[in-house]
Length: 247
Image (cartoon, rainbow, N blue to C red):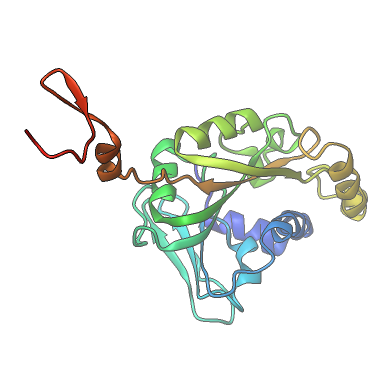
Protein backbone atom coordinates (compact mmCIF):
# COMPACT_ATOMS: atom_id res chain seq x y z
CA UNK A 1 0.00 0.00 0.00
CA UNK A 2 1.65 3.21 -1.19
CA UNK A 3 0.92 6.49 0.52
CA UNK A 4 -0.10 9.46 -1.59
CA UNK A 5 2.74 11.77 -2.53
CA UNK A 6 0.81 14.78 -1.18
CA UNK A 7 0.58 13.16 2.27
CA UNK A 8 4.29 12.41 2.22
CA UNK A 9 5.14 15.96 1.16
CA UNK A 10 2.92 17.43 3.86
CA UNK A 11 4.52 15.27 6.53
CA UNK A 12 8.16 15.90 5.64
CA UNK A 13 7.97 19.53 4.58
CA UNK A 14 4.98 21.01 6.39
CA UNK A 15 5.09 19.47 9.87
CA UNK A 16 7.58 19.96 12.69
CA UNK A 17 7.70 16.21 13.33
CA UNK A 18 8.43 15.47 9.67
CA UNK A 19 11.29 17.95 9.56
CA UNK A 20 12.74 16.37 12.71
CA UNK A 21 12.43 12.90 11.15
CA UNK A 22 14.10 14.12 7.99
CA UNK A 23 17.04 15.52 9.96
CA UNK A 24 17.49 12.39 12.08
CA UNK A 25 17.59 9.93 9.17
CA UNK A 26 19.65 12.16 6.90
CA UNK A 27 22.34 12.62 9.56
CA UNK A 28 22.75 8.85 9.88
CA UNK A 29 23.10 8.42 6.11
CA UNK A 30 25.59 11.27 5.81
CA UNK A 31 27.82 9.52 8.33
CA UNK A 32 28.22 6.73 5.76
CA UNK A 33 27.89 8.74 2.56
CA UNK A 34 29.24 12.24 3.29
CA UNK A 35 29.56 13.10 -0.40
CA UNK A 36 28.94 11.75 -3.91
CA UNK A 37 31.32 13.79 -6.04
CA UNK A 38 31.04 12.81 -9.70
CA UNK A 39 28.68 9.93 -8.92
CA UNK A 40 25.16 9.02 -10.01
CA UNK A 41 22.74 9.03 -7.07
CA UNK A 42 19.18 7.70 -7.32
CA UNK A 43 16.40 7.66 -4.77
CA UNK A 44 13.31 5.45 -4.99
CA UNK A 45 9.98 5.70 -3.17
CA UNK A 46 9.97 9.01 -1.33
CA UNK A 47 13.68 9.47 -0.76
CA UNK A 48 13.91 13.15 -1.71
CA UNK A 49 14.37 14.35 1.92
CA UNK A 50 17.65 12.39 1.91
CA UNK A 51 18.97 13.40 -1.53
CA UNK A 52 19.41 17.16 -1.23
CA UNK A 53 22.98 17.05 0.21
CA UNK A 54 24.17 15.35 -3.00
CA UNK A 55 22.76 17.88 -5.46
CA UNK A 56 25.82 20.13 -5.30
CA UNK A 57 28.54 17.64 -6.25
CA UNK A 58 26.96 14.49 -7.73
CA UNK A 59 27.19 13.95 -11.46
CA UNK A 60 23.47 13.23 -11.55
CA UNK A 61 20.67 12.93 -8.99
CA UNK A 62 17.35 11.29 -9.89
CA UNK A 63 14.28 10.79 -7.68
CA UNK A 64 12.11 7.86 -8.81
CA UNK A 65 8.56 7.77 -7.47
CA UNK A 66 6.24 4.76 -8.00
CA UNK A 67 3.03 5.19 -9.96
CA UNK A 68 0.59 4.26 -7.13
CA UNK A 69 2.21 6.92 -4.93
CA UNK A 70 2.35 9.71 -7.49
CA UNK A 71 5.07 12.19 -8.25
CA UNK A 72 5.84 15.78 -7.32
CA UNK A 73 8.38 18.19 -8.80
CA UNK A 74 11.65 18.28 -6.87
CA UNK A 75 13.81 20.07 -5.82
CA UNK A 76 12.05 23.38 -5.24
CA UNK A 77 13.68 26.27 -7.04
CA UNK A 78 15.89 24.04 -9.22
CA UNK A 79 15.39 22.02 -12.42
CA UNK A 80 13.14 19.04 -11.78
CA UNK A 81 14.83 15.64 -11.34
CA UNK A 82 11.85 13.57 -10.14
CA UNK A 83 10.35 10.90 -12.39
CA UNK A 84 7.18 8.78 -12.18
CA UNK A 85 7.92 5.09 -12.82
CA UNK A 86 6.70 1.53 -12.51
CA UNK A 87 8.05 0.04 -9.30
CA UNK A 88 9.86 -2.81 -11.04
CA UNK A 89 10.77 -1.10 -14.36
CA UNK A 90 12.90 1.96 -13.75
CA UNK A 91 13.95 4.34 -16.56
CA UNK A 92 17.62 3.86 -15.65
CA UNK A 93 20.24 2.11 -17.77
CA UNK A 94 21.73 -1.09 -16.38
CA UNK A 95 24.78 -0.61 -14.18
CA UNK A 96 24.71 3.20 -14.16
CA UNK A 97 24.04 3.99 -10.48
CA UNK A 98 26.71 4.46 -7.81
CA UNK A 99 24.46 5.14 -4.82
CA UNK A 100 20.81 4.12 -4.42
CA UNK A 101 18.54 5.15 -1.53
CA UNK A 102 15.15 3.50 -0.98
CA UNK A 103 12.75 4.98 1.57
CA UNK A 104 8.98 4.38 1.65
CA UNK A 105 9.52 1.94 -1.21
CA UNK A 106 10.29 -1.56 0.03
CA UNK A 107 7.75 -1.89 2.85
CA UNK A 108 4.90 -0.56 0.67
CA UNK A 109 5.78 -2.57 -2.44
CA UNK A 110 3.45 -5.25 -3.78
CA UNK A 111 6.48 -7.05 -5.21
CA UNK A 112 9.53 -6.47 -2.97
CA UNK A 113 11.47 -9.32 -4.58
CA UNK A 114 11.33 -7.85 -8.09
CA UNK A 115 11.92 -4.40 -6.64
CA UNK A 116 15.27 -5.54 -5.23
CA UNK A 117 16.08 -7.25 -8.54
CA UNK A 118 15.56 -3.90 -10.25
CA UNK A 119 17.77 -2.19 -7.68
CA UNK A 120 20.48 -4.77 -8.39
CA UNK A 121 20.15 -4.20 -12.14
CA UNK A 122 20.67 -0.43 -12.07
CA UNK A 123 23.62 -0.47 -9.64
CA UNK A 124 27.05 -0.63 -11.18
CA UNK A 125 29.92 -2.84 -9.93
CA UNK A 126 30.73 -1.69 -6.42
CA UNK A 127 27.44 0.21 -6.24
CA UNK A 128 25.86 0.71 -2.84
CA UNK A 129 22.26 0.45 -1.66
CA UNK A 130 20.85 2.20 1.42
CA UNK A 131 17.48 0.96 2.70
CA UNK A 132 15.33 2.83 5.22
CA UNK A 133 12.39 0.77 6.54
CA UNK A 134 10.12 0.71 9.60
CA UNK A 135 11.54 -1.31 12.47
CA UNK A 136 9.28 -4.24 13.36
CA UNK A 137 10.19 -3.79 17.05
CA UNK A 138 9.80 -0.01 17.09
CA UNK A 139 7.05 2.37 18.17
CA UNK A 140 6.70 4.14 14.83
CA UNK A 141 5.20 1.20 12.95
CA UNK A 142 2.31 1.17 15.46
CA UNK A 143 1.31 4.77 14.75
CA UNK A 144 -0.72 5.54 11.63
CA UNK A 145 -0.10 9.28 11.95
CA UNK A 146 3.29 8.96 10.25
CA UNK A 147 4.35 7.29 6.97
CA UNK A 148 6.20 4.60 8.94
CA UNK A 149 2.91 3.18 10.20
CA UNK A 150 2.06 1.79 6.75
CA UNK A 151 3.26 -1.24 4.85
CA UNK A 152 5.24 -4.19 6.13
CA UNK A 153 7.84 -3.49 8.86
CA UNK A 154 11.01 -5.56 9.00
CA UNK A 155 13.40 -6.91 11.59
CA UNK A 156 17.13 -6.60 10.97
CA UNK A 157 17.42 -10.35 10.38
CA UNK A 158 14.63 -10.31 7.80
CA UNK A 159 16.25 -7.43 5.93
CA UNK A 160 19.67 -9.05 5.85
CA UNK A 161 18.24 -12.36 4.62
CA UNK A 162 16.20 -10.63 1.91
CA UNK A 163 19.22 -8.69 0.69
CA UNK A 164 21.44 -11.77 0.57
CA UNK A 165 18.84 -13.67 -1.45
CA UNK A 166 19.08 -10.91 -4.05
CA UNK A 167 22.89 -10.88 -4.16
CA UNK A 168 23.46 -7.89 -1.90
CA UNK A 169 26.04 -8.06 0.86
CA UNK A 170 24.94 -6.16 4.01
CA UNK A 171 27.88 -4.07 5.22
CA UNK A 172 26.49 -1.75 7.89
CA UNK A 173 23.32 -1.07 9.83
CA UNK A 174 22.04 1.44 12.35
CA UNK A 175 18.77 2.86 13.61
CA UNK A 176 17.10 6.24 13.74
CA UNK A 177 14.02 7.82 15.36
CA UNK A 178 14.65 6.84 18.97
CA UNK A 179 12.09 9.41 20.10
CA UNK A 180 8.33 8.97 20.00
CA UNK A 181 6.16 9.48 16.88
CA UNK A 182 4.13 12.31 18.37
CA UNK A 183 3.73 15.97 17.46
CA UNK A 184 4.23 17.29 20.97
CA UNK A 185 6.68 19.94 22.08
CA UNK A 186 8.29 17.58 24.59
CA UNK A 187 9.21 14.91 22.03
CA UNK A 188 10.41 17.44 19.48
CA UNK A 189 12.63 19.21 22.00
CA UNK A 190 13.98 15.94 23.37
CA UNK A 191 14.56 14.33 19.97
CA UNK A 192 18.22 15.27 19.68
CA UNK A 193 19.11 13.97 23.13
CA UNK A 194 17.12 10.76 22.63
CA UNK A 195 18.79 10.13 19.27
CA UNK A 196 22.24 10.40 20.82
CA UNK A 197 21.28 8.13 23.71
CA UNK A 198 19.65 5.57 21.45
CA UNK A 199 22.63 5.40 19.12
CA UNK A 200 24.99 4.86 22.04
CA UNK A 201 22.92 2.27 23.89
CA UNK A 202 21.09 0.24 21.25
CA UNK A 203 20.87 1.70 17.79
CA UNK A 204 18.43 -0.97 16.55
CA UNK A 205 16.23 -2.19 19.41
CA UNK A 206 14.87 1.25 20.33
CA UNK A 207 14.76 2.78 16.85
CA UNK A 208 11.70 3.58 14.80
CA UNK A 209 13.42 2.78 11.52
CA UNK A 210 16.24 0.52 10.39
CA UNK A 211 18.91 1.81 8.04
CA UNK A 212 21.00 -0.80 6.27
CA UNK A 213 23.77 -0.35 3.71
CA UNK A 214 24.57 -3.16 1.27
CA UNK A 215 27.02 -3.66 -1.57
CA UNK A 216 26.12 -5.15 -4.92
CA UNK A 217 27.77 -8.56 -4.95
CA UNK A 218 29.31 -9.50 -8.28
CA UNK A 219 30.92 -12.93 -8.61
CA UNK A 220 34.45 -12.96 -9.97
CA UNK A 221 34.60 -14.21 -13.57
CA UNK A 222 35.92 -17.72 -14.04
CA UNK A 223 38.99 -18.01 -16.28
CA UNK A 224 37.90 -21.16 -18.04
CA UNK A 225 40.96 -21.25 -20.30
CA UNK A 226 43.31 -21.44 -17.33
CA UNK A 227 41.19 -24.09 -15.67
CA UNK A 228 41.40 -26.31 -18.75
CA UNK A 229 45.12 -25.73 -19.24
CA UNK A 230 45.93 -26.69 -15.65
CA UNK A 231 43.98 -29.92 -15.77
CA UNK A 232 46.01 -33.00 -16.86
CA UNK A 233 44.73 -34.99 -19.81
CA UNK A 234 44.18 -38.72 -19.74
CA UNK A 235 45.47 -40.37 -22.89
CA UNK A 236 45.21 -44.11 -23.42
CA UNK A 237 44.89 -44.72 -19.69
CA UNK A 238 47.92 -42.59 -18.75
CA UNK A 239 47.97 -39.08 -17.36
CA UNK A 240 49.87 -36.63 -19.58
CA UNK A 241 50.59 -32.93 -19.03
CA UNK A 242 48.16 -30.62 -20.77
CA UNK A 243 50.95 -29.22 -22.95
CA UNK A 244 52.21 -32.61 -24.17
CA UNK A 245 52.15 -33.21 -27.91
CA UNK A 246 49.23 -35.38 -29.02
CA UNK A 247 50.06 -39.00 -29.86
